[in-house]
Image (cartoon, rainbow, N blue to C red; front, side, top):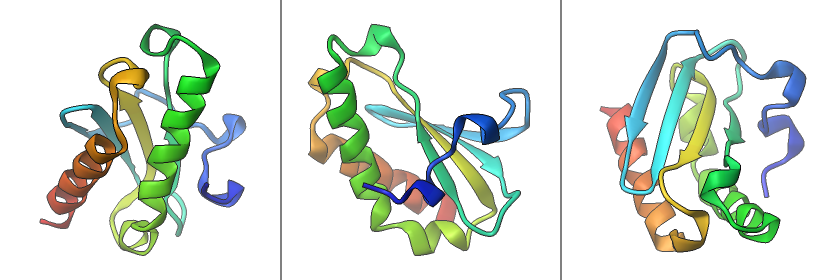
Length: 112
């Protein structure tokens, strides 16, 4: 799990009207908003229509945070300060390997 300083808190949540880079993968959609702080912060947004129980939503969140934990130093050197991560299908159908491959593709995209 990411430390709370790396997660976007409710009162710091960025306005959705801000210009952002949006990337869509196989199971994730990531909206990256320009940097306002020296450290990249991440939020997982899973609407109720994408999970059946709170347990599947929380497992999904923990998996995404775990993959991003390994990429924090790279993310801090990018122009993005906030990352909003959305599932594109039901969270119970998304495997850890799918999440890892989508985030790896996203990281390759922003490095280029």
